[in-house]
Amino acid sequence: MMMIWRSKLIDLYIPSDGIVYDCFMGTGTTANACVLKNRRFIGFEISEAQCNYSKNRIIATLKKKGSI
Image 1: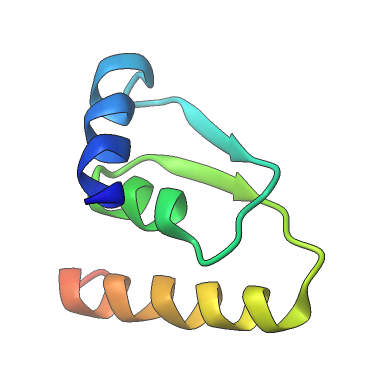
Image 2: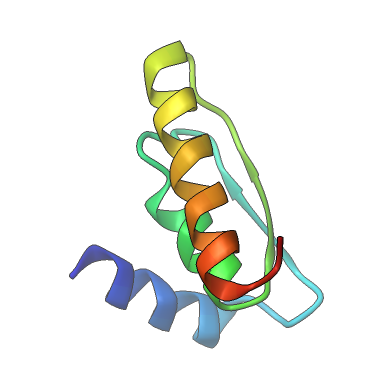
Protein backbone atom coordinates (compact mmCIF):
# COMPACT_ATOMS: atom_id res chain seq x y z
CA MET A 1 0.00 0.00 0.00
CA MET A 2 2.80 2.43 0.89
CA MET A 3 4.53 1.71 -2.41
CA ILE A 4 1.37 2.57 -4.36
CA TRP A 5 0.94 6.09 -3.01
CA ARG A 6 4.67 6.80 -3.16
CA SER A 7 4.69 5.71 -6.79
CA LYS A 8 1.77 8.04 -7.50
CA LEU A 9 3.52 10.95 -5.77
CA ILE A 10 6.67 10.29 -7.75
CA ASP A 11 4.65 10.28 -10.99
CA LEU A 12 2.95 13.55 -10.04
CA TYR A 13 5.82 15.58 -8.64
CA ILE A 14 9.18 14.21 -9.82
CA PRO A 15 10.20 14.87 -13.43
CA SER A 16 11.71 11.96 -15.34
CA ASP A 17 15.19 13.48 -14.95
CA GLY A 18 14.61 14.41 -11.30
CA ILE A 19 16.23 13.05 -8.16
CA VAL A 20 14.31 11.98 -5.04
CA TYR A 21 16.02 12.72 -1.71
CA ASP A 22 15.00 10.55 1.25
CA CYS A 23 16.75 11.60 4.45
CA PHE A 24 15.10 8.83 6.50
CA MET A 25 15.37 5.85 4.14
CA GLY A 26 14.33 3.13 6.55
CA THR A 27 13.45 -0.04 4.61
CA GLY A 28 13.78 1.64 1.22
CA THR A 29 10.14 1.87 0.13
CA THR A 30 10.64 5.24 -1.56
CA ALA A 31 13.87 4.04 -3.18
CA ASN A 32 12.09 0.99 -4.56
CA ALA A 33 9.31 3.16 -5.94
CA CYS A 34 11.99 5.26 -7.65
CA VAL A 35 13.57 2.17 -9.17
CA LEU A 36 10.21 1.03 -10.50
CA LYS A 37 9.46 4.52 -11.89
CA ASN A 38 12.95 4.97 -13.41
CA ARG A 39 13.86 7.87 -11.14
CA ARG A 40 17.19 8.48 -9.43
CA PHE A 41 17.30 8.70 -5.64
CA ILE A 42 19.58 9.60 -2.78
CA GLY A 43 18.84 7.94 0.54
CA PHE A 44 20.31 8.29 4.02
CA GLU A 45 19.86 6.00 7.00
CA ILE A 46 21.87 5.84 10.23
CA SER A 47 20.94 2.25 11.09
CA GLU A 48 23.33 -0.21 9.47
CA ALA A 49 20.73 -2.99 9.69
CA GLN A 50 18.16 -0.83 7.85
CA CYS A 51 20.78 0.12 5.24
CA ASN A 52 21.55 -3.53 4.56
CA TYR A 53 17.86 -4.42 4.39
CA SER A 54 17.04 -1.60 1.98
CA LYS A 55 20.13 -2.33 -0.14
CA ASN A 56 19.07 -5.96 -0.54
CA ARG A 57 15.51 -4.91 -1.27
CA ILE A 58 16.67 -2.47 -3.97
CA ILE A 59 18.93 -5.11 -5.53
CA ALA A 60 16.02 -7.58 -5.60
CA THR A 61 13.81 -4.98 -7.29
CA LEU A 62 16.50 -4.23 -9.88
CA LYS A 63 16.94 -7.96 -10.61
CA LYS A 64 13.17 -8.45 -10.91
CA LYS A 65 13.02 -5.49 -13.28
CA GLY A 66 15.90 -6.89 -15.33
CA SER A 67 18.16 -3.90 -14.75
CA ILE A 68 21.00 -6.02 -13.31
